Image (cartoon, rainbow, N blue to C red; front, side, top):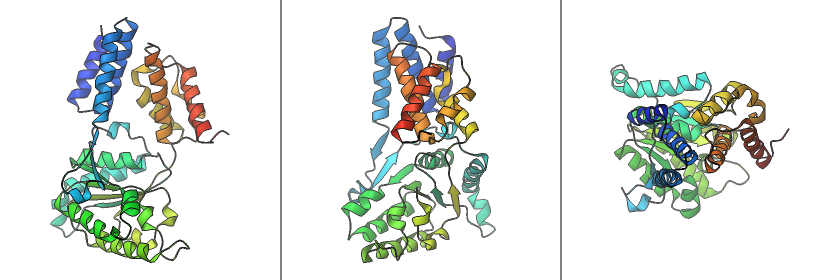
Length: 319
């Protein structure tokens, strides 16, 4: 049966509402039970976890007109999984601190930071940051589907934006505008069209006049493409980069958890350097899944390096 330390860790993660850690330990239990020959129990545990992940995100039903534009996601407990530089953590914590003490600031005629622009390469923690803000503020986490807003409602985009900002006003939450450059592109570019200029002008007005209690988080992979007029509409602009050596070690240690074998993360860092946070996480997950399917309790150094190398090849990052 399961080891005592695994059972204690499972209970501890549940009591802390650390869903990601809970799932990781549950998968470790499945691997352990498979090793003991309890394959049916191991399979049942994996199926329960798969069912949980399937229902992780759902569409809001506030308005049928916005059902395909705004998603409500379960933020869960993600702060322990966010590995970024200390200065970025300080900025994130400052946003949370000001939110919780907004009334104190208001007495002095000041407003808490509510509008944040996140920039950086894909997979470096921007979306997870929005989820962390939702977790730490206790607000629901919404994602605005910018790509659908543009492709499906071209000609109605401004009207849909107005509805979205009405939702932001009426239902407090953390609202993530991912791929923000799709509607925030500089005016005057060669591919600029009249409709998109009108959308951008409306967006500038909506952001500036918004006085809700929600947090608006815009994320972009291409900061240079954004119209400069947008920058002053945000209270904070946070820049993300690919993880350095220390962050890579922390990422691997966090993700591998008790699946770790007898090796040091320091010996693996060079194989992961150049990958994004998301790519390193995926490589660790692939190594863990390989161990589970092979009924092994640990991930070998060789297998982890193999999965990291596979990610580098996939993303053409080989040196």
